[in-house]
Amino acid sequence: MSLGLATNSESVRFAPEIAAHRNDISFVYGTVGGVVDMKSLSLFQMAHRTRKEHGESSANEIIGIYEDVIDLYVRSAKDPSYFNEVKAALDKRMSDAWSKYGGTLPFGRRVGTYNESYVRRMAYNYSYDPRDYFDKSFKTPFYYDFAELDINVPTDASVASLEEIMRRGEHQIEYKIWPGIDHDFGEIYWAWYGIYPKGYLDRMTDWTWEVVSNNSANQIAF
Image (tube, rainbow, N blue to C red; front, side):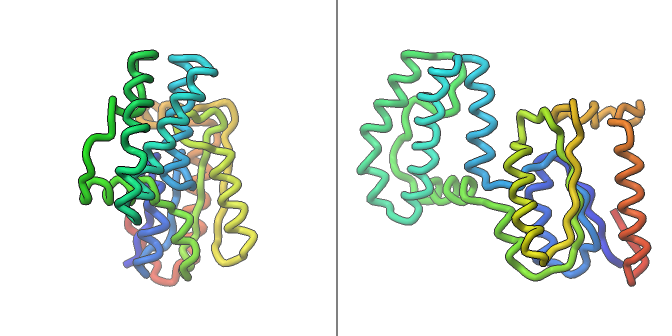
């Protein structure tokens, strides 16, 4: 029996890894999920929220600090000495930002002391990139649905990533950007009321049926 994966939001990000490591995934259908590295995704999400709460000019400073915090973990996982080299200056910037802005900031008041397991865990999280798995050889077809007004997922950057992968000609990928809707995707979690973008269910079922019909195992489980 082959498996078909219908994924949504965060789970979309891990689908390429699953497909790359299993030979029984017949298709992946992903809705409103990012195809970018976790650092880029985090900065995109926090930039929108921070601009809304603190304004454009303040957000630039806040997001700059947040990016440096991320880079601290990523670089320190490879070179632990880097942590203490920048810790004092970064702690001061973080503390000053809390005193200056308050509210909700995407980082704490300081980075704390070096903890190897925590640093490595954070570095792995921010470095995770689903695009890496498309470098591997597998034949699983993918279909991605994106929301034009998504503020949780960078639609433009995700589409650019897919276009680059598609140009290599090694993977079967299709996608659609649904206009005028956001990450909730027409209240996707209230689907039993039939509140989906017009044509979404037709597109999903038609594409899935085409994949199922062409699958030699002829047995698909969601």
